[in-house]
Length: 174
Image (cartoon, rainbow, N blue to C red):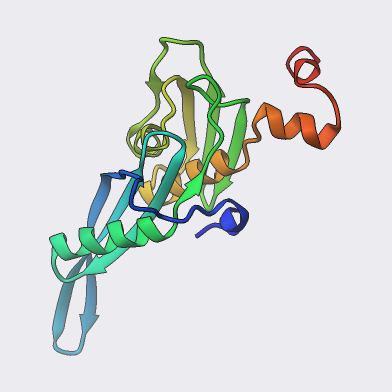
């Protein structure tokens, strides 16, 4: 998981209903002395669509087993992201490996304007209105990790107000 996520981890309880989204399945090949060994890797995003999201990667010789492993991995890596009035609190740029993402807050009714891998993360996190752009590599693994990194770097207005020692109104107007 990402190093930033250590302090934002969420414990899974029975009352959280998580929905999983399959981002991608890739066929991987291992060449051995006896020939080629085929396997599959799957990347899955799980979330409650109310600010909790996690990503997981699973590898296996069978597609369904790879997906199940990815779901279990994602449930172990759940994090909480700040969502403010159905969108994100502020603009954020993030980079992971060759992928760079830009996410911007949007007005009510805009919807999720994002590509496939980014859309899965944002919708699973519960973001209703956002503008997103991916630059650089379109590799789904790196895009998902860059999007989650951007969401983890967000700070909600209440946190900013307490860190600065000012009122909440001053953060909004200031």
